[in-house]
View 1 (cartoon, one colour):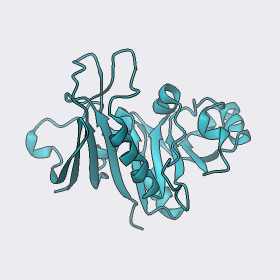
View 2 (cartoon, rainbow, N blue to C red):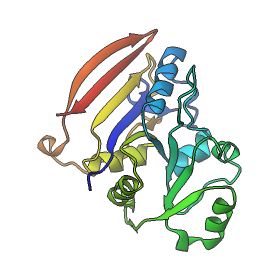
View 3 (cartoon, rainbow, N blue to C red):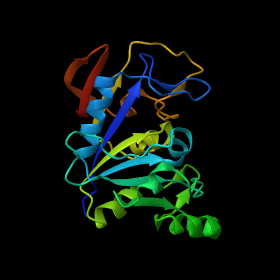
Length: 220
């Protein structure tokens, strides 16, 4: 069974940072860039983030377009410990779109029960030293009928998808500011020891959105 098509969305400073050292990230990019992200959400079957993004940003992950989309994307959360706040914003509007949590329920049956009580669907996946097996997540999403997924963060999830060879397209929104080495990177560490091993992408579009740049890349 083919996996879903994965688009990785990045919204960063010029030096590839998604937040300051203290975690402040709203808003790095401007209003026009954020409006395009809403359209990207509406164009995908699901939006996927890691648990840290939920804890730090508390996003709804719904597509706020005008007019609203005919169908909202499902919200997918990848976590090893099910450590997601039950009062997160996305559970407050659970009727708008499902929330699917991939993790290891047996790690914390109590958290499993709490998240199910607020409307989450829990999907069990195996984990390893690097965290959740993203290949298994994508296989399960395909089995559930999802053909396209927009991955919005954070850095560990983005790196896991790239290392798995699962990123088909990158939509990169780049703001004209510099946050420095102590800012939080868009990607966690990757284990490539030679340039020849690094995945290659081809830029297919470059647009100006007010002060920001929007770059689109396809897998080479």
